[in-house]
Image (cartoon, rainbow, N blue to C red; front, side, top):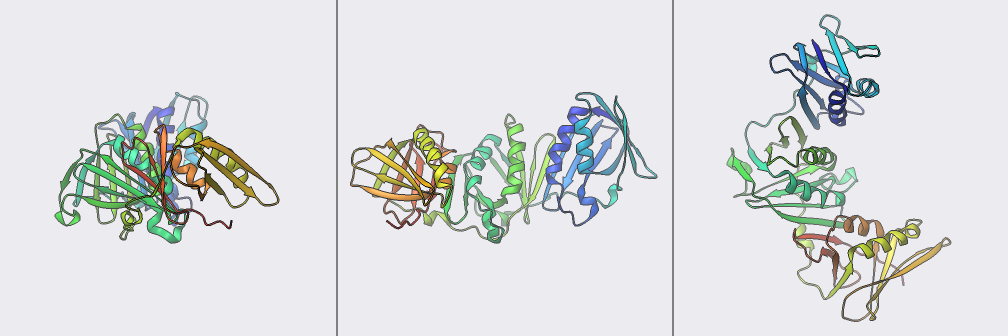
Length: 385
C-alpha cells in the first residue's frame, strides 16, 4: 500500500476517529486505527472502533497502491499532528513485515502495524428502521437534553438520551433522577420502515449513550448544512451516515422511564425572570454555594424582587436581589445551583418562567416564548429553616 495525502486532512481524520479507539483495549488491535486505501476511487478511509462506538471517515488522496493496515492510534496521532501543516505526507506499507513508513518534507518515521484481517467490522444495519433526519433538528434536540443525563454507570439506562421519532416531531428526554429535560421539535423526517415490528404505529424510541452523542454532535455540527443524514436502527445498534462519515453506536437496552407522568399538570405559582440576569446572579452566588452543598435559596417577596442566597458554614455567605414578575404571597425554594445553571444555559429566550406548587414538589423551568416546547424539571432541595 502506498498513499500521498495532505497533512491537515489526515490529521483531522485521525483526531475524529481516535475518539472511538479504546483507551483500555481488551485486544491490542482495538488500540489501532484501521487505514484503508482504494486506488480505484483515490479515497482513504480511517476507522476507530471500541466495540461500542465506531467512527469512520474518508477523504480524497493520491492512492498509488490499494491496501489496508491498522496503526497504533496514539503514535500515529502524535506523529501526524507534529508534522509541518498542509505539507504532503507519504505513507508506505510493507505487505510482508507490516512495517509502516511515514515520510514528510522533514523526516521519516517507521512504525509496526497489525494486519487488518483481525480488525472487527463496523456493524451495518441491513433491516429494521431507516429514516432521514434533519441534522439541525436532531442537533437542537440533543443539545437541549444531553446535559441532564446521568454520569452514574449503575443507572445505565439514564446515562443516555432517549429519542422518540414521531411522524412530524422528534422528542428527546434525559434524566439523572434529580432533574429532567424534555424537548419536542418539529421534524419532517421520512421514516422508511423495513421491518414493521420495530415501529410502534408511526414512531419508535431509542436511547443513545451520552458518550456516543458527544461524537454524533460533532458530526452533525460539521454537517448541519446537509439536507438530511441517514439513520439506521436495528437490534440494539444505531448507524448515522453522512456523505463521507459513518458513526455507529450500541443503544442502551430497556424501557426508558415514563417521564411524562413526572411533570405536574398544573401549577399554582408562576415567576418570570430575565434569563440572563438570573443566570449571572446564580453564577456569582455559586462561587460560595460550590464551597459546600451547592445549595442556593430563592426567596420571593411581595415587592417583585427575588433574593438569591447561599450560606457556606464557617466560610461565608452571599446574597443578591434580582427583579421578578409574579403575583402572590411570599415563597421560598432551594435548588442545587449547578442543576439550575446547566438548564438555564440552554434556554435562549429573553425570559424564563419558573412554575411550582410547593417548595417540596417538582419545579419546572420553561422559556417564555417556548417555541420548541422545552421543559426542564428540577427537584427542589429540602433545607432546614
